[in-house]
Image (cartoon, rainbow, N blue to C red; front, side, top):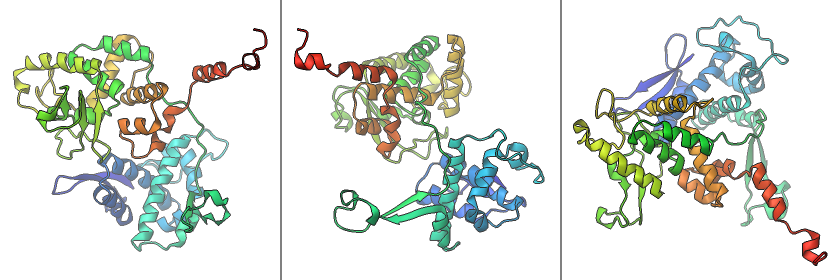
Length: 391
């Protein structure tokens, strides 16, 4: 079992799962096509799901189970997933490998295990909904209950019965602070940039919260730097840009969110655009490209930058800056979300700025650090201050 990319005649690409005979696994392929085409999911999402489902189907095949029987014994798969390293879980491994099991060193962390389990559950739910599996599997995967056991204030306000589902199989994930880039590291990376283009890329991620795919997919027509963009047919005031999801980007850049969003720009980013415009105008081959970020210093000149190039750029800048650990693209985005939350911005606004479909995805940014906790305690008046004693 292995994940494999498929390119449809329309040009749309998604990932599927092939068995050892290189035949498409129908239950996995149906689910992954539904994610890509029915739910308009990103190709990268189907890739992640496909690798996770391939692990599950590989375990089923090597333990002599059908995938339905594997779903009925998901706890056993969890144990295998935690302790089976590539020599036992890889596509080319020999199935006779004996695992150490509990007591040995885990080879996958809780977050990875839970991600694989979420993909498997989603596939099983889709199979049940399309008649490929019996409904009894849902009760084995989820705890299902109505709201009659809840206090009255927690029930549906309209008096209707509501149902709750909770995954039965899940590894506890220790709460960790968000992995953000420090302000000093961001400044060091900016100083290590060798071009105005590279500085603008860092600024857009660190001060506007853009993902690397959104940066590389940005078109010049998406950027409005005027105080009033009415002449451009845009009613949004002051400098901003529009993050638009497009499937025809030749560099494979992809805006994760299906919903278009507007991101305000501060004076530093605007200055970055101005400086980059002069740098770009000196390269004759890029004049006809609508992509904001194009190759200026290596072939093919004028081609839109690939998302992978963003990681290479940050790694090179981090080395030149002498940082112990390379700054990654998502750490800059995390820095923006954290700084916005620390400045008192509401979680709903943070979610809109970052393009999160749910505010729960932005919750990680509102956990206060130790200094903010100390400031909160110091801000509480003491009994002496409240009673006027000692004045």
